[in-house]
Length: 160
Image 1 (cartoon, one colour):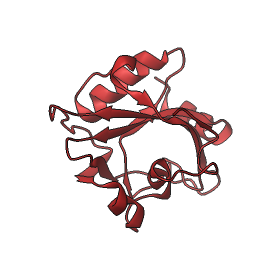
Image 2 (cartoon, rainbow, N blue to C red; image 1 turned 180 degrees about the vertical axis):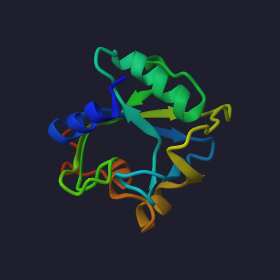
Image 3 (cartoon, rainbow, N blue to C red; image 1 turned 90 degrees about the vertical axis):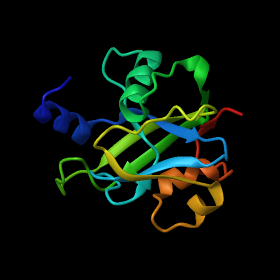
């Protein structure tokens, strides 16, 4: 792990590679949580996290999913939606001189057995919402909404 100063320098100067977890329950609703931190603070967003240096995709998926939803997922458990780009004016450090740039790989997991247990401090007020509610809500961040809009403009590479 990087020191906070080193991480700030990375966020300031380079894009981050991240995984978002699009968790579907038996009712086909999606897990979202109210973000505690920038970027996207005070918006509902799907859980996720960044890939660390020298961490494989599968190892990052296992670590992020265990931390965010209490289940250690592997590539066989998920479907990759595509590759998205999220550019924010804000950053975790609340420094107004730079934003955050993320290349994001959303991973869909169907939680058929209700195994998900949210257990982290990145979000609060977790809930499951259907896609229609997600798209209509002003409380859900536009980048989470983009996962439910079938448009060539919201994803520069999509896996069908």
